[in-house]
Length: 249
Ligand SMILES: C[S@@+](CC[C@H](N)C(=O)[O-])C[C@H]1O[C@@H](n2cnc3c(N)ncnc32)[C@H](O)[C@@H]1O
Image 1 (tube, rainbow, N blue to C red):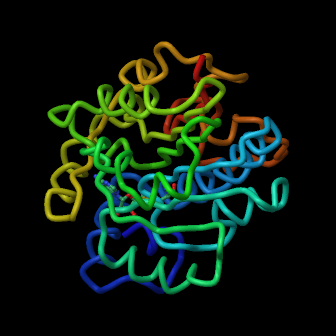
Image 2: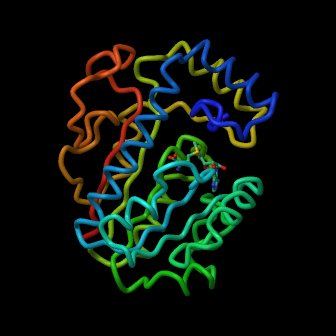
C-alpha cells in the first residue's frame, strides 16, 4: 500500500484496492508520504552533519530513491547503515538491491521485539554500539498497537545506544481526522500491520527523556525545510503527520 501511495510499481491488486479505500477517507496520504521521505533526507543529512556515522533504520521499507545510506554517504561516505524490516518481501527486494553496498546490511527483525534486533550478531558486527547511532523509526510506530508497548520499545532502543546518539521518528496523527480513524483502522485490519490512530499528545511522550532538537515535534513539512510552496491539502499547521529528532543524553 505504501509503495502504491508513493506511485511505485511493487504492489498487488489487493494492495491497490485497500489503498484506494484509505484515500477516500484521507486524501492527503500520498503527499504525507512524499513529505515523510523528504523529512528522512533532511533528518539523515542533519544527523550525519552532527557527526553520526551509523544508522539503524527499523521498518525501513522497500528501497526507493534517496535511501538512508545514500543520503548519509553524501556527508559521511564511510557511514554504516542497518536496514531492519519484518516483511519478507521487503527483505528480499532490499537484499537484492543492496548486495553491492558494503556499508549496508539488511536484517530481519520485528520492532515489537527490539531486544532481538539489538542482540542480532549481524547488527552488532556492523554497528559499534559504543559510538553514536541514529535510530530511525519513520512511519512505523503508528503500526505498533499500545498493547505492544511502543513507549517501552522506544525506551529499550534508547537505552541500548551510546550518549550522543539520536532517535528520529515520524508518526501519522489523527487530531484533525477523528471521523477517519475507525474506517481506516478497519481497512488495515486486513493488512499485514494494524494502523493505530494516535493524537499528537500521544506521540509527544515518545521523546520523554531525550533532548528534542529544534524545531521540536512538528509537521513533516515544518522540520528544517526551506520549501516555499506548501501543498494546499496540508492546511497551515494543523497536525497530520508529526516528526522529530531527539538526542540521547
Ligand atoms: C510505511 S513503511 C515506512 C518505510 C520507511 N521507514 C519510510 O519512512 O519511508 C513501514 C514499514 O515498516 C515495516 N513494519 C511494520 N511493522 C513492523 C514491525 N513490527 N517490525 C519491523 N518492521 C515493520 C513494514 O513492513 C514497512 O516496510
